Image 1 (cartoon, rainbow, N blue to C red):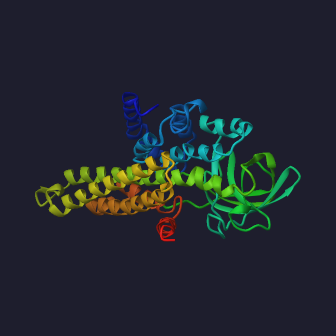
Image 2: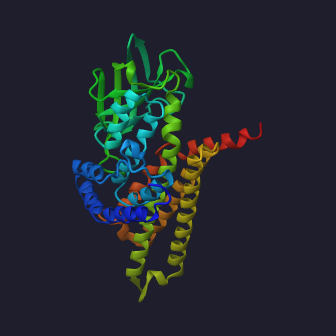
Length: 382
């Protein structure tokens, strides 16, 4: 779908919004009650084509531009955080695989993932290291097989996936040049999969702690050359994903604002609705400005990434930094508008408030984003 297909895109956007406000809320209630994502949600999202919106038409995707996809992601993010997590990850992980995949790997991994027939978990974070060139998980090559050892944790869909898109390093190396990207079968021998405890928000999404002990991985499952592991992770996934997370902040903030405006219109104190109170109306006005500013910075970062601009990495971090802080302010004010009733479990704003905290950690904390931005700024002085 090209930028010229305005009517078709508008129809798709209305369809997504209708799903989010209808079936999406029913799924949200089920997830909150059971603390699990029902398999039916995965199947429904797949059958509606929502897991392949950002993929090219020749791969079986909808062929949306990244900017178009983000406008839909904003809508999905108004729903339950686990629902938007599925949409976000599935519409992005194919890109990390595809950029270095051979034709054979594209047929084995990329196309089935785009179709929703293969669930792939992005597997970078470790409990004893950061998420970059200091990776500790390592592989030893013996003939046509790598033997993988080490630990990973906080791996979204790491329990329920079919493959881990996993990043490790060649044993004995240091820095980015020794890193590798591997497609690791979930059923591989030599791995212990431990479901992690329930989270504060984003209930229902599984997260895994993984322990590998010389788990065998075919060399044929390596994406790119030895030494290209971080290039697969950073260029293909993290930069656009950070922009995507920024837009999820916009969507969730938009939902919080909707709930606050509706409550303020209904709630009467001393004979007047809360909307008549200047303190409340000003808070809502600040929220509206905050949301729009974050939305426009995010879309600007998306357009720069689409154009292959050199400042896209820094802008992606700027967008996420600004959007995360915006979401914190907006949800805090939205909860305050609700007063005490908003703090009770079962109140829609209570769920939004809990879910909002997760974006602070997705694709790097604020401190990581500041590091990326500062590096870009200071590089210009050298």
